[in-house]
Image (cartoon, rainbow, N blue to C red; front, side, top):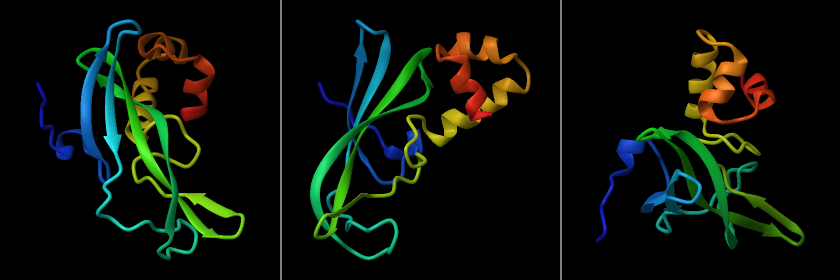
Length: 135
């Protein structure tokens, strides 16, 4: 059985949601997102159109869904610019090099206003150093 989930529900701009599954072994929700192939590949630095070198999968932690940790598996295009020049395209909802979505960071920051860093790290099951770096 397949389900059709609008991207507006999860506030994801850009990728297409292919599959939502429950990983029973690790007790988390996995959301598989593919890149929308209709959109052109843009170089993040020069804002010019480029060619796709390859597609790269990336796991990013998002806000909990149904009381379980949520992981987005997103597909990003690697832009080929020229000889020995490749860059990963920009993703609107994830900062460069981050393993967490922007809204997950806002959730952590909001919880830290009312709870200790240790309590937030236990609640979200992440290291307290990570919580400290997000705030």
